[in-house]
Image (cartoon, rainbow, N blue to C red; front, side, top):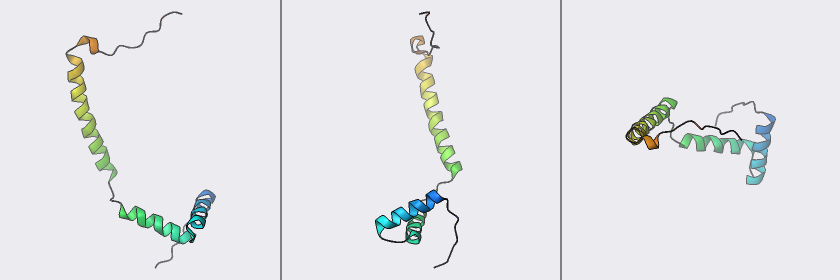
Amino acid sequence: MQRTNVYLTAEQAEYLDARAAVDGTTRSAVLRGIVDDAAARPVVLDAEIRRALTELADGYTAVSQRLFDGDPRLGIDPVETQPG
C-alpha cells in the first residue's frame, strides 16, 4: 500500500467520516472503496461521448425534417399572444 496525502474540503471530510461511521470502518477505507469502484468502471473519453451524441442527434434531425417537410400543418409557428 502507498501513502497519499489528499486535501479535502470540510464537507468532503464530513461525508467520509459519516460514511465510515455507518460502515464501521475508517475514512481511508471508505476512500479506497470509492477509488476501487471508480477504477472498476470503464473509462469513456469525453470525445467518444460527444461523437455518439452527435451521431444520435443527426439521425433524429433527418427524421424530423422528413416529418415536417411534407405537411405544412405540422410546422412549428411562434406563439402569438392575444391582447387580453
